[in-house]
Length: 352
Image 1 (tube, rainbow, N blue to C red):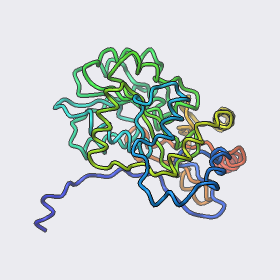
Image 2 (cartoon, rainbow, N blue to C red):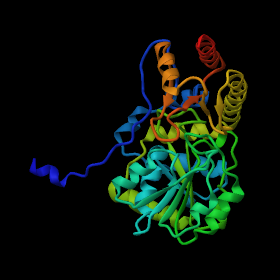
Image 3 (cartoon, helix red, strand yellow):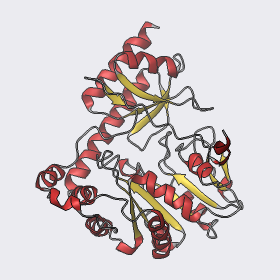
Image 4 (cartoon, rainbow, N blue to C red):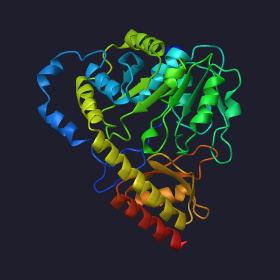
């Protein structure tokens, strides 16, 4: 059809499977296995629905205030969006507009190349080494921008801050984005760099450690100038991106630091225990600093294990991408959920 000649055609991002079965164990999309702070439930019950007839605050002030207080960052250095995907998409649109290629790893969050294709941004993937670590020299060449997930996804590998800073120092003529979706599970944040370098954007989310994937809350920290440029782009196509409930409930999630830290610690404790038990079963994996484990088994194919687990209503993530097509990404669930997973894996592997 003639009109199709003018359609922007892209290969979309493929999210993790979203099954809806009773008594399933869902370990495929890195969601938090625990509910948000009870303070969020109280805020939901007290919420005045009459306010929903009005447009929300375009600056998400309740949430911005809470984030500013918690991270000790000026509100003018905070950008708020509908999940970190929204924040990252706006950052791509705002900062990656040169004719030079942006750089990111060949094995990383698979939305990066989708956004690059969507916005017609030239890009070049830099191969991780054999241990799935970045090579700093790969990011010290002329480019149009750099984006690194730290800890990386789906590998869970953490890049030390000294290496991150070397990359920033070598790229002060472009914007460097550090995607910290999983930073709360043991990594060291690049947040201090925003005061030292005016071209660094640090992106985080409520979807993992704060147990609010369903509310879609993401945010970024950067210099006042970076954030102003992002807001200019955001307000050029939608001034009301974040709804009022998300602003109010998100603020409550930030304020309950004790619950947040206890939840993260439970997940980290379970992760480390499961690492030991998977190792005993013969699995090989990276030293994940996230809320998932990226594992392979020398005798059992990843897709074979995924299919077996699915038959038991246990869902894990498998990627068909080159280099990692024999790995499974296993989100950390509750101790009971992980014990069920481990039991099924053990029985299957011992039967081989």
